[in-house]
Image (cartoon, rainbow, N blue to C red; front, side):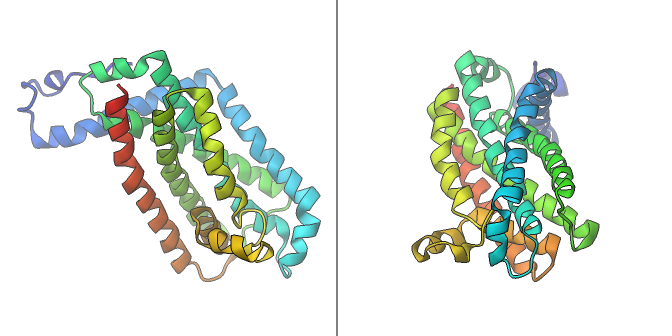
Amino acid sequence: MTATPLKARTGAAVGTEPLGERLLAPVRDGLAVTGRNLIALRRVPRLLIFSTVQPIVFVLMFRYVFGGVVGAALHGVPYVDYLMPGVFVQVVTFGAVNTAIGLATDLQTGLMERFRSLPMARSAVLSGRTTADLARNVFVVLLMTGVGFAVGFRVHTGVWGYLGGALLVLAFGFAMSWIFAVVGLAVRDPETAMAASFPVLAPLVFASSAFVPVATMPGWLQVFAEHQPVTITAGAVRALMLGGPAAEQVWHALAWDAGIVAVFAPLGVWLYRRAV
């Protein structure tokens, strides 16, 4: 992948290009890196295929193995309807690990040095990676929706409720990608990035309402589970797809997304500058 030098973009010396050009250049650079990462997915489709196997297994296992036990605590709500919004959130949370692995791989292979030598925005490498993972999440969420309908999941609020919930899931996945971008840049090794991600993933996903109600957990764990972002996002998605008061939960979920990006995006750019 190559980037167009700033001088060639405007026909002017670097630093004298118009303000609009300087503002748009990082966006174009980010889109160029996004395209590069999406081409990699197209050329190695196994990466996309195997990233969808795990959530499908989770759906089948929880739907048919644990559904009878957990469903008794839901007071009439079909467990599959409770489960699928949590699975959507789980899918994008686990998928964010690909951001860490991808960035660590690029560091290890020397690609980051090539990017650093190009006249491109420093933020473009990270924004391009997280945006490509956002595009991948669109496909995964659609696939998991089909799997969910196949095992009995139904949206109670119509198409707009589903779309609102899906967009909220994608926003959360985008925010989580920035957390794992920092992990990948910090450890600089793909295998270490995978190992370092699990201590973050496990408490967020399994100590949440993604698969079971928080009320079924021990009291000391409920304090954490009720206030962490996976539970809040899953609850908001359920309210949008199944019905019930949603506005406050949606705002809380969006506040988590904005806070995560506000903290980890600058930290990721800072680590990128230091890494290369």
